Amino acid sequence: MARFEIRVEITHLPGIADPQGATIERALPALGYDNVTEVHMGKAIRLVVEAADADAARAEVLEMCDRLLANPVIEAYEVTVSALDGTSA
Amino acid sequence: MSVTVGVVQFPGTNCELDVQRAVRNLGGDAELLWHADTTVHGVDAVVVPGGFAHGDYLRTGAIARFSPVMDAVAAFAATGGPVVGICNGFQVLTEAGLLPGALQKNAGLKFLCTTAQLRVETADSALTNACRVGDELAIPINHFEGNYVCDPAGLERLRADDRVVVRYVDNPNGSLDDIAGICNEARNVVGLMPHPERASDPMLGSDDGAVLLRSLLSAAAAGTPRQLVG
Image 1 (tube, rainbow over the protein chains, first blue to last red):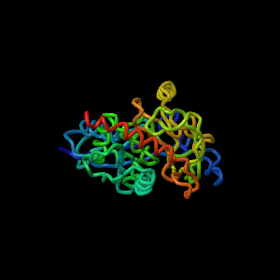
Image 2 (cartoon, each protein chain N blue to C red; image 1 turned 60 degrees about the vertical axis):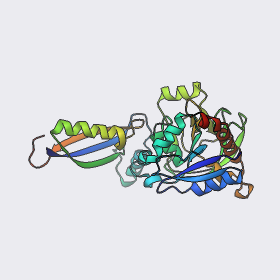
Image 3 (cartoon, chains in turn green, cyan; image 1 turned 90 degrees about the vertical axis):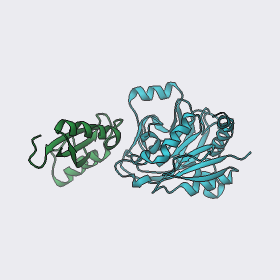
Image 4 (cartoon, each protein chain N blue to C red; image 1 turned 90 degrees about the horizontal axis):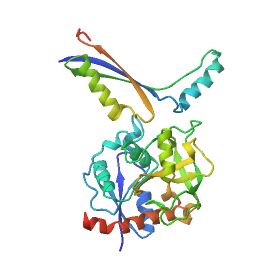
C-alpha cells in the first residue's frame, strides 16, 4: 500500500448559476481590474488516501465524489492524484 | 383518531419544536425522532424540519442524508408514508434522492427572511390535499439556499406530472420556474422552502400554513391502514 495526496476541485456544472463567482467578478473592477471575465467559485478538498496504486486511489476518490463530496445534480469535479513517500504515481 | 407526526432532529436542526407545537395545536400529536435512530417508531407521518443539519457542512443536507434515521425515513416513504421536508429538510430530501433536483444559493446572494406569497399548484399531494388549486398563502421563508434547480428534462417531468406543489407568486430567490415546493412521483413525499409551521396560528401573523399541516395530518390519517397491512 502507498499513500497518495488527492486534490478534488469542485465547480458548478455549466448552466448552473454561480452567484458567488458573479459577485466576485463584479467586485474586481472596483479595484481597477477591468480585464477579468469568467470568474467561477468552487471548492477544493485535499485528502490523503492509502491505496494499492494511483489508479485505485483515483477510483476510490471518484466514488467518494459521487456519493458525498459533490452533488452531481449541480456540480462537476476534477481529481488530481500525486504520490507521497516517494511512491511513483 | 389522533395521528402522530415524527419530527426528525439532526444536530443543528432548529425548527423541530415549532413543527411539534404547530402539529399539536392542530390536533395531531408529534414526537421527535433523533437522527441516530434506525426506525421512525411507528409514526403516521414524518417531517424533516428546518435548521442547519450537521452545520450544513460541505453542502446543505449532504451529511444529514447519511444519518441512520434517513434510511428509516426512505423505507417509510417507500411504503407510501407521508414525508414533508421544510426548508433545510427539503435540502436533505433532495440530497437523499427522495426528491429530484437541488437547492443552490439564492440569486442575488442574499439570505432571505421575509413572508412569501405562494400559489397552490396541485391539491394532489400529502401537503396540499386540503387546498384548492390557485389558493394563495402567505408563508415565511428563511433561507440562503432556496434556489431550486434541476436539469431541463427533470423540469419537464415535474411539469408534465403536475408535481410542482407550490410556486412563488413573486420569485424571491431565482428558483427555477418559480418553484417553492415539489413532490415525488407517488405524491407522498413533499419538499418546500417556506415554513408552514411559522404561519400556523393567527398570533404568528398568518395562519395560512395551517391548511398545509392539516393536509399532512389528513394524509397521515389516511395512511394508518397501510401500516396495518405493512
